[in-house]
Image 1 (cartoon, one colour):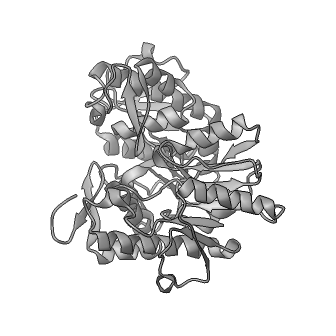
Image 2 (image 1 turned 45 degrees about the vertical axis):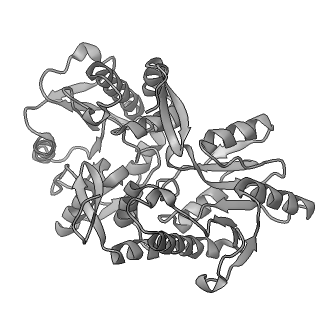
Image 3 (image 1 turned 135 degrees about the vertical axis):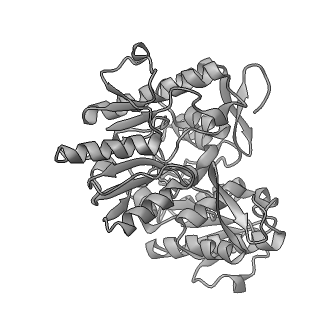
Length: 214
Length: 214
């Protein structure tokens, strides 16, 4: 299991409702929630730029630092596993899947295919199970159709694992409502601790104890 | 199966990107997609305000007209089924689930419980399976937590069916991207026919052949 984690300037699209310090707190809470879920399924590695403070991580997990950008770092890792004779498949899990459950991880692991893609909201790819050294990630923008096209063009058998919870990555202010509605872990408690609660404006909105609606 | 359908002024939150006529076209296309999916699982009834043009519906389906608002109409229907000795369970399916598949309908039908709730994005309830005459719907605003609380307070056994596709109701402009990304039916073709395609702005955005980005 590989969990890419952005330790600097993460969650910039939440800047309208969270301060930099709050975004950092929430990012770590979501990472912890994801680690709690994946840790039962095998060894987990956090892939991060240099400077991640290990003391912040209260979980038994390997941290791999890389100066490379996300795709280059992931594809170097795929090449590295291939060089070692592919001792085990690679499951990439995004660090902001605050609603993820063990059922979702088991769900993708049980799918057939050289590559299994789990779509996120808005064309993203929230998890990828890689069973072939020929796959490469193409994160950025509409990564789900890109990954699908890449796998097909490369002649790989690709399948799709769809899940309400695994499909819910937390990027935009409206996503915070999903954490309050369906979350079970630290991320929900962190948001509640910041004073967030649900409000009713069409789809769920957010209210902060300061009183203004978001 | 009951599919509530708003035949007047539907999809008002899409008004910034679709004309009234286009919203009507898309609403019908989504209804047809939903009917295609549910029709294999048993008789379907469209619940609508008076004035739905049957000629618009090219499917073998019963249309039940009611002057009542959504909850009153649904709860009258629950009471009616109860008066007849509950000959069959009631599955409510929203008419705007453009990504729904037969697997989702089978999925909720296979769940245990007096009531099974299928959450939608933003606190909505996209499907409800009702096996008890004591349940009442509370659609409006954050209906998912309301339905959950009502079922529990009424002493009913409630379970939750979660699905990426069934969780994706089409209300906001950003939801149209999901139809283009993951749709398989008429709704996708209707949107493409209107000139929509995907664009890359953070999460998937929309582009219309007129050239402006949404």
